[in-house]
Image (cartoon, rainbow, N blue to C red; front, side):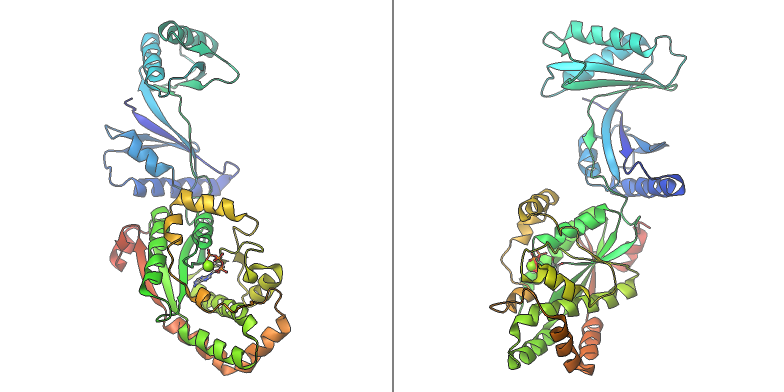
Length: 410
Ligand code: ATP
Ligand code: MG
């Protein structure tokens, strides 16, 4: 089928007033950026929607891209028709015939935005419906649950005909709700948490803690690959690589001397949050996103979350907290991170996991250990921050700062 345009409907319809305008402008800019490889496209804005005129471009690759843009509610490939009744009838028939699989039942829904049109919508439903029925032997009408709803929108300038409504990613345009730091491990969960945060309009910068040379180059490559996949959804992504070896080694020595190995993960996580808070401050982020899911491992019991969470005063966002693993895996597959996440390279935490990690760490004990570190604590944190490297990633590679500026989304 040769379509003429794509009608894109915007999501989060409860947004009102100036915010709506901001929402729509941001979303339109993001759509244009995602489709910038197709200069023939033309964009016409309507209320809570945009019409993308294809001007000869193919619909399918555009649909592929639109499906993943946050803030889009639904979209439809549309055929543009002249007003004259016979043309509308012929075009409708052509559209129905082009569908695969062929529908068994249909109904016609006409909307007459241009009131001067000689037939009203009830008449039009019959006039078009009868023509389609007469020319499609196995097709029947079903007004309640049709396989296909043939929609005809008669406007002053043209008539638009379509029947497919594709579900978009929903949420808010990227960046509309500010910025957060994403704690990105090499696992299954944190990339999904990042995608969910982005879908809710948060721009994210990823932070990864590595214990090179205890952790391998491949473990780092894996995180880079995951961040690149997130960059497909976000246009680009900054990945902060934090050296964690010294801090971990120090903690491990101290804890094993005092027979408190079970607390190492709790303490490591508290350090991660403190370091991330500093990176957040530098980068204008107002929250930290993690892939924690309640009860999944020792560091994700309520007791652990309580003790770990208290080390940072930024809001901790845990999009997966109430989700089951199987559902998280489903998302990881859908967003294209699963295959990378299950590669076998160890990350820094797996290496330092004690035999019996604390599931209910005592806040007082933890604070006591940290107090014992004294000035060392601040020094270790500052050194980790100072040693942090940043790479700017795109879906297909590393960018330099000039390119980054040129494509800034907001
Ligand atoms: P994931 O699949 O995201 O690794 P997980 O179920 O393996 O999660 P943990 O390893 O306990 O759980 O990690 C919990 C969360 O802590 C992760 O989702 C991530 O947000 C953060 N995290 C863990 N390790 C790292 C790391 N090396 N660098 C950055 N963040 C990390
Ligand atoms: Mg993990």
